[in-house]
Length: 208
Image (cartoon, rainbow, N blue to C red; front, side, top):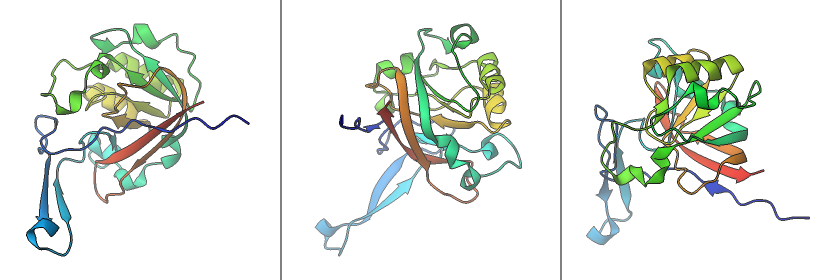
């Protein structure tokens, strides 16, 4: 029997001073207790937005009275997933994805020009590749249940609403630099934070 494929960690590492959305809280990691200073244990303090590094958006992010991250259907975040390479350097456009053989209840991740570099420790890029509004609407009409991207945002408000308003789970900030397009099994588990519009997540892929 062949050995099972190895799990690939596609989670962007959270680190002090890393890139963040411009109007979100910056990322600060400090130590409130240190063995080196004579304390009994090391204790770390985290200060950051819920939308830092690899994270999942909840409907509450763009819907005034939407559900928070504790209500997400975790089944949408675990199971088979399609990783698609996007060639267009500007956006994930309808013209490039409209011929994908997507079936209802599929999960899809997009690898774009964003993944050509290790973006997490670089300055914020205003021209990152994001999902166009009509492409987001297309994914919603195809019955996709999860969409993931390789930068801090899936797209503008229209793209977010096309997905979140229709129960589609959104993963942002994936580290896809060293992963090839293809069919995978995915595990994505966001932190359970009551009242939060998003949460950091650990995401693993295993080739099928």
